[in-house]
Amino acid sequence: MKALRYSNVAWESIMANKMRSLLTMLGLIIGVASVLTTVGIGRGAALGVTKEIEGQGINTLVITPKTENVGDSSTLTAGDAAALADPRIHPEIHAVAPTNSTFMRVANGNQAIESQVTGATATYADIKNLKVERGRFFNAVEESSQQRVVVLSSLAAHDLFKNADPLGQSIRINNEPFTVVGILKKSSGDDSEAYFRPIYTPLEVAQNRLINTPRYRGDFVVSEITIQVTDRELISYAESQVEQTLRLRHDLNVNDKNDFHILNQARLLEIAGNIANMMTALLGSIGTVSLLVGGIGIMNIMLVSVTERTSEIGLRKALGAQDSDILLQFLIEALVLCALGSLIGIILSYSVSALLNGIPDFPFDIILEYWSLLLALAVGLFSGFVFGLYPAIRATRLDPIDALRYE
Image 1 (tube, rainbow, N blue to C red):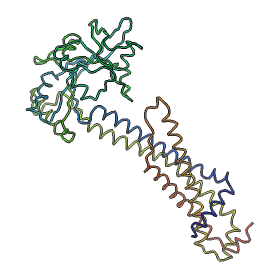
Image 2 (image 1 turned 30 degrees about the horizontal axis):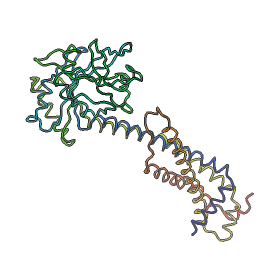
Image 3 (image 1 turned 60 degrees about the horizontal axis):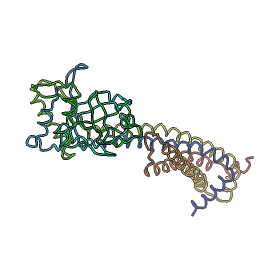
Image 4 (image 1 turned 180 degrees about the vertical axis):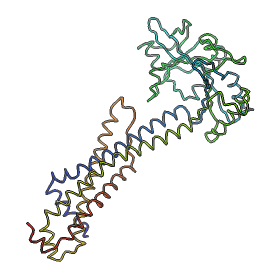
């Protein structure tokens, strides 16, 4: 009951000095809002990176050649991809998609762009989670019969056709005619599309008609091999098996280094998550400086309040109030100030996040999680207790006689 009664007294004191109370809470309001907003930015950025990696498939391995010098030929071949796709050798692998990529001039009448033309297999879209917005991706029949069909990224389609319908239309790649069969959906947060303007066509068509593809040990070389593993739990095992197969095919001795790289998407996701957590912790720790400043401000004002109310304290002691009563009164007043400041800071952080999330081109969402809100409120109350304790103790040490004489 005492706590409730003193809460009413604290509220009356705050309302009696509205401007001073607001200025007292200002540091804490800014501190709570800055901590929540910066942590929300960190969480949003982490989620954006996670979605981007997951969008390319978590249970995938990407193999690229290791070249010592720029312009060196790849040591990965279509034969390597075929060996990895053999279910008798690698039952843990679900699908394999070799690709060959290069920049080329692509034209539709007077409209022309430089685009990354990628020769791929029909399974590539499923492995890389490419979403077709209109039309379709080319199929295995078109791949085996080497039909000259292409699938355009959304930006490439816009640059080549503006507002016209590209489906069924013809474009020219290095003066070779190709028919558009599909338009890909734009990937949210994927800035690479703006630079590469990717276009996809069957692999053998690209190798035989577009790209001057060299051979290595009798097979066409490829730029990259993407592998989809049957189960995410098997990805580390699959990585070791793929490495062993490629080393055997490339005649590498025990002491020889790999002439290829294997990128494990699951490991990349884990690394990205760890970095994001560290960045979130760093941003949050920077914001806590504002909380410290706000707490010191509350302590200063509470000390002023004790000085102003010295006569009141002396009168209460003279009427029989115990030190514990005085301590509880001023401590609750500090807690009420901090709780109110924390709540206003939480509302402010929600307003800032809503404003930033409403910006169309903002790179990621700001995510305010429930645990961070509860933590902010708890930290605010803890600040009130810590920084209000000294003024409250000082109030209990006042001598009643001296306090009554104070003016």
